[in-house]
Image 1: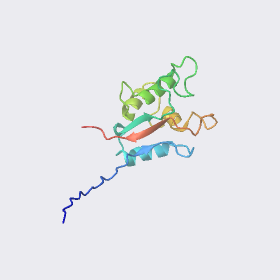
Image 2: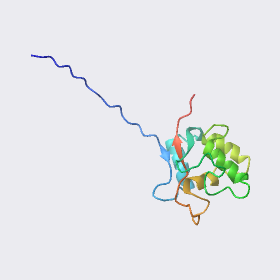
Image 3: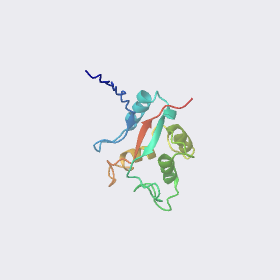
Image 4: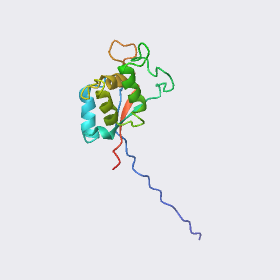
Length: 142
């Protein structure tokens, strides 16, 4: 008789990272944004990070097809660039919205974030319904 050793393999539980992004062309509203922050990120903007989606052309002067009118250096373009690249490398919503508020951008109704989540500044936009960023919960390191 031959002894056969068996190895039991256990799978680790898959933990799903909470994200918020457009689905099926349905608008992400401001109330949904704040519900996500409050329920999934313990109400902390420090725990929410902005990640560009694969359709963003990060190496381009105009990485998304809206918000870069004129020279592409206006307030919207500046804030969109922070949302796409982080503020000084920091991708937390806290860092970005803190800087954006100095340019007059509302932290309660951040329209540049809303535009990047939904594909433009208006439902009449040709790209409306196509998201360009998603929000991901990453707890702050203490």
